[in-house]
Image (cartoon, rainbow, N blue to C red; front, side, top):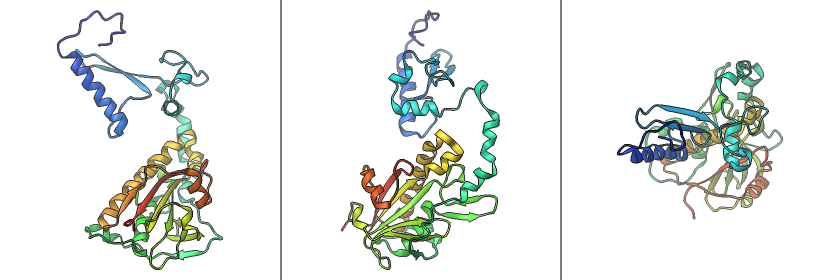
Length: 302
């Protein structure tokens, strides 16, 4: 029961405090782990501890009024940046939903986005062997990254599975099948590939040699995969919601790379932090429109 409800004169029953704490802990765990749905942090849930009936209330502001919200006080000033972003892209109440705008998702120009990707047309091309996806059907012992292994990892992490004409399917889940993940390989010690920085051309399954400055990306592992998000492309369809799609896609790509590396017996290390400016300088990207979303070290550290 809500202590702030002046119309509710009931007294707390035995076990109500423990039940309330358990319900809150469940929602807190869901919000932090993102494994199950939760109203937090952009909605409030009122639970009647006697009947267990629930009511969710949105704290998102209404269009044209930054402070028209059930939240008390100057929400846009008090709330954290992350919470304000979540509120800005939250689905509106049904009475404010723009159903015609939703249909814009299916415009031919939006469907064409799934075939748009970076190709680096003037960069030297490096052919990759056809990925042997059947290798992922059985666990292998520890190994060092080879060219065929790198090709397989790039394929399942950021590659295209098939182009059916009407729809492009990918090895890894992608919001709207747009394919926001762009993969780069920083090669330091892979037989058959000169050390350097390479961009992965997903539509043609090949590498584009961007520079010989492998040392520009800190690290000593044989290969480092850098994942970025093509925010501009996704924003053409999802507008302000694009950042969430970019981050979700990156999470799926990271999970795929981790599982594939485990099966192939390749060392996998996900960096918890990096210098955006340094990485972007090495890749030749602009972090404001192509943010770095992951840096993964492959192979054993010499």
